[in-house]
Image (tube, helix red, strand yellow):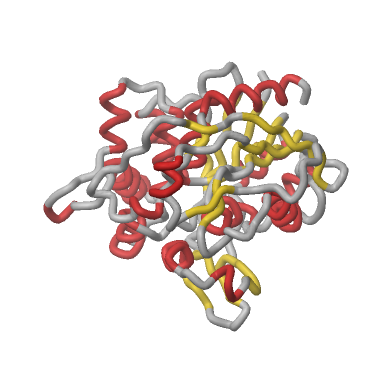
Length: 330
């Protein structure tokens, strides 16, 4: 059985895994561990646990449990002292306290949810994401970075993790043994890049014989990457990987509805291309197609950071079909 390893976090990974889980492949989802917003941020601060939010989304995406259990893991309390919290986040945090180990908590949750494949935290070290702007101002944590409106205007001097984490050995092992490595889609600075800042992860991707695919974002985040073209994303990820490593990139050609574009205009701008070339840098193939999910997106009114979440999304099945075709020739 061929092995696919995905790298990302949040809604992007949830979508991707929801599609890939339907195929006869060995799936491993490597997940970012720097989330500090919403329910996850509160639990990190008050309980001293590792961030459960992105892991919880991936577990639900890969779960073969009855629908009621999947709904329970996604349920978000709307009232009382637990308002804003996801049951799944509370469940994972409680499991971490009971087992004393986040990796073991994830494995236990995987058994409860009958997960197809495996969800692997990129690190189990407690670390935070920092972004230093060109003027020297330091943004601490995903939540602060996400809300800053001057990132692109001032420019990014560096982005790093502190304390310096150790890579999860299982993540490194799965990358080295992969047939296809899929990076993204997801928030560039806060979902994709944090994985590639963990020492050992870029090295494993470079050493792996797998084909590497980058899923281009449908939209660029306003005030952060709204000046980015598809080529800029590819080049930025390649730099973090230590040189040209991405073999192909998916690029959506279908436009969202006018109503959705207007609704989302304050948060995002459509990702464009600098040229119509089939290759980037003479070696990264551009796979164009309709990858847009046209179904309406709704979030719970209890979700305190719903406004920052994606309303323009990839279609899981459309994207998965292309990735499976690439796997066949990997």
